[in-house]
Length: 297
Ligand code: GUN
Image (cartoon, rainbow, N blue to C red; front, side, top):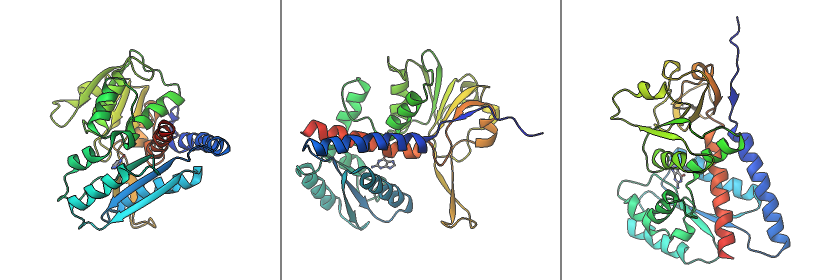
């Protein structure tokens, strides 16, 4: 007997493509009105394969919707001082509205120092402490790309969140921590009762089996299994791990933090990997860049 599939995919590819279409229309309007075309720059240090893929996708997305983009590439040997000098240059470059420094950086460079060097008004990644603080206090800011993308996905699929039990697995500064803050906010999406689980949580299953919404951002492939979730759950999978696979042209396949097939069978909504949260992060970065450009003009 074939298994009945009753879940609905939260299609990040489709949703991000809708957002990009909306942004392209905005760009056209800006052009007609003689306004500033949004300009995003990215700094890429070293030759990490995943970082390269992400940055290239960001640049390509800019081209697609009519934003300007600039890519600054540096060898992994660049000194912290040189990198900080470049950031200062971009902070003062009025021709661009926002820029990102792709993480992770080589070990000899202090990521915190780099993050704090980016001018908050150009920090479209939303990583600067000032912007994280504003996010937490519900003030206008740049919400970082992955959390913003997840919120957009929940909103555009009209997922009910008010009064729901939301479990966030992972407490990273880029995903777990902001997600836990955003899901607890007095807003839609939000108004959840949020539990944050992490490496020191004694029995994660005790929490996940009571959850209406689970956001997994652990970076541990196929961590969430069917026995850990209840029927009808909504699952957001933030993980993307590259697993060696000789049958693929790239030599690898992408695996999420969720054991998809078995968890999907119990879910009402679930994000796929790839094609779920990933594409949404790019759409969010573009939205932040448009906001930065509007603020600057
Ligand atoms: N590394 C992983 N995610 C991100 C992101 O959203 N922005 C940057 N700059 N680096 C990342």
